[in-house]
Structure formats: C-alpha cells, structure tokens
Length: 272
Image 1 (tube, one colour):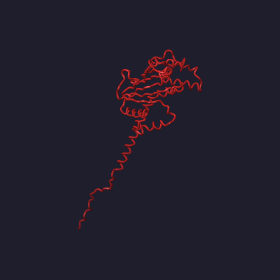
Image 2 (cartoon, helix red, strand yellow):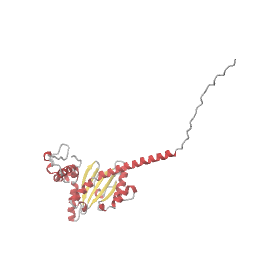
Image 3 (tube, one colour):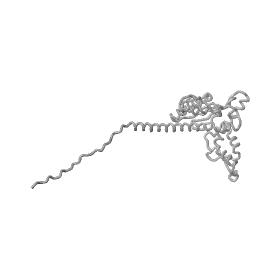
Image 4 (cartoon, one colour):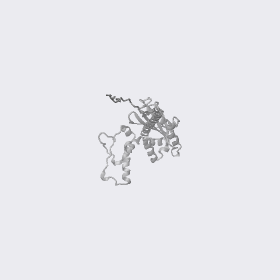
C-alpha cells in the first residue's frame, strides 16, 4: 500500500498498529514505491471457515488500520489528560489528500476531529453547505433537505451521536495558529467532538474510527446523489411543462382540398 501521509502516520505509531494487527505478515522492507507490504504464505493459509474470513477481512482493512494510528494515539492521550484533569494534547495533522487534511487533538474531556474539505464546484459548495448546516445545527433551510435529519434526531439510538460543527472560510480556533491555511469560499471545516463514551472500550473506539474515516466519502456521495436527484426532478418538470404546452395548442380543422383539373370537351359533330 502506498499512501501520501505515511511519514505523518509513522510519527503517530502506525508501525505498532500494523504489527498488532498483522504481526509477522508485515514485511520489514516494503516493495519498491510502496510504504507497507504484507506477505502471506498460502501454504499456511487458514482453511475455509471463520478464521480465514477474519484474516481476509483484516487484510481488506489495511488502509483503515493504518489511518487509525492518530485516532488511537489521541484516545490514549485523552485518558492521560483526563487523569491529570487539564491540558491539551498535540495537534495531530494528517494530510491524506491534496489540499485536504484531518486534524485530531485530545483534551482532558474530549477528542476533537476536524476535516478540511475542498468544494471544487459552486453547486457542490451549495449542496455541502445545506447538507452540513442541517446536520450540525438543524436549521430549517429547506424542508426537503433537512427532513431526514429532523426525523433521524428523534431516534433514541443516535441521541448520543457526536456534536458536529461546520464553518466555511475561517478555520476553527484549534487551527488558527497553523500557517498557510486557505481562507477562500471553497474551503469548509467540519468538526466532530468525541466524548469519552465514543471510545469507552476497544470495540466502540474501533467503530468510531471506522465511521469517522468514511465521513469525507459519505459527504461527497450525498452531494452527488443530491445533484442527481435535482437533475431528475428538473427533467421531470420540463417533461410536464412540455405536456402542458402541447395541450394548449389549438387544433386546426383539416379538410381535403381538391385541385381543378382541365377536362377537354368532346368534339362537336359536323352536320352534312
């Protein structure tokens, strides 16, 4: 696997995470032009069953497990700060995409995760703003856009979901000291506030990490779906308008037209 933020992951303990997950299967020297390689001995591969399925699933989660390193470090730091009762941990930056990054910082009572995302198109920025503002603040910008979130927040199973904050152009206070941040309208910042209940045990922490890593893809997937839905509605509305226009046309009675035709007269008989 090759990943652009590998050097940052090494600082956050990715080697220890991969050794814990894959053990001797991690090659000491990765393949050329790659950051990490797994070596599997097919002769010693587990037989079909639960053990093999578990190993295959673990291998498929290689990138997820690598990106989990800063989150696990932040969760561990939060527990240490909670014991001392005060302080903030180091701001962990993960530049995993061009011009986009994930920032993770632990404090005594929470772990803050900030996504910076770029909206390349004007329509993407509008859809993203509506989507995220309704998620974060539940403002009634559009009934159709926020109804899903209004209904979802009523479910008792997600009442303990993390707090979500959204801002454009201006970075959150946690990032205000960083140099070189873009301050343009196409930049958005999404902040998740994770409390200790969101990583209370390894199983819950693993689920939280998996879900939060998928946020960026989740956001842009819904933007694309929203655009596709709007386009389909526009095409449907144009079709309906065309039907109305066709019904408004006046019907013109059509009659058979006969053209004049020259018929020669019969010759006049001559009398003797």
